[in-house]
Length: 295
Image (cartoon, rainbow, N blue to C red):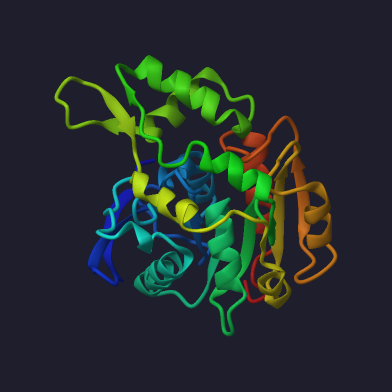
């Protein structure tokens, strides 16, 4: 199953920028359950992280859309790195929903992508029909932000793929105990060739996204007003050992706002990779069980 590659233009204070997304459909068919799922990645990642989940969902009749948020993957880099912030991401994702020409979408977001989905779902007349949040919520501890700040924006150069995979296994150890094949696949979408013409590899995102961490003093981020405004069905996935979505935060998310369902993923920290059958099955089954009433 091969996704179709598309692009559209977002708008920032310095002009237009290209946003790339991949559309997954069952071979030779349009989506036949009438549902579009948007999957949005984490801070330094890109839409290819969802290849496994997207293929699974498309095989069950879903139309699955996996964008590269601006500054990541195949999407453009912003001229002014100060633009890498949630107002820009929300505007670009609203434009994506408009581009897809649907009344409602299901949203699956990991980390940053989860926060984007949460903020969109909290808006009046939101087109988010159901929401899956992978290891992020309305309280982000200062300690987790400090950890992220130690590596975001750092741009190592790898002499070969083996060195890049070693970096990925260390940096993304929180994704869980992946198979060798999955580590290889994850590394393939993590790196891109540098411009040095020597076969070396670098990380596939703009280091300017670290600018947001440099502009402010890091503290706990409190987003409970957004959470309490959400009314759509919601599933929260939490890595058992996550330092970004704390156990007490996840529990409170089941008790207020949309009163989410909660699934704890064992042997993971931040954030479950959604690359094995058990994890993708949780998402697929939950989406299937929350089909619109008119289906």
